Amino acid sequence: MIEVKILYEDTEVLVCIKPPGMAAQAERSSSMDLVSWLKNYLVGKPSGGGKGGPYIGVVHRLDRDTSGVVLFAKNEETKLAFQED
Image (cartoon, rainbow, N blue to C red; front, top):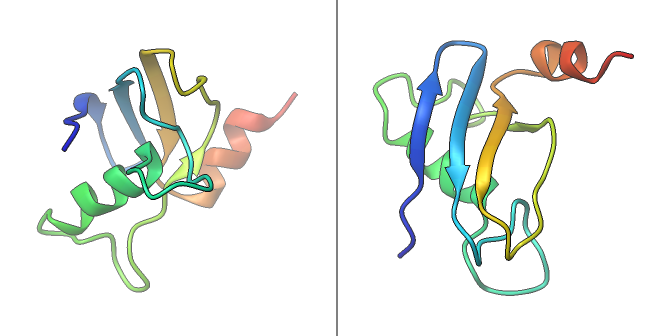
């Protein structure tokens, strides 16, 4: 299984390095995508993501074959703040 390096995490955001070959979001394959990996990661933490499981808001994406730093919001309010013009 592909491992993802978490660079920074607090109550609002999660920053990680997306490895090459991993889709940022679910697609039509059975391969693990980054959003699913991060949800599994958060479920394994003491907070467990709260009721209904963890929230991972996609702020931006990278292509499957591209690696790099990706920012995710851990709640809807933070995601919307990043998406404002």
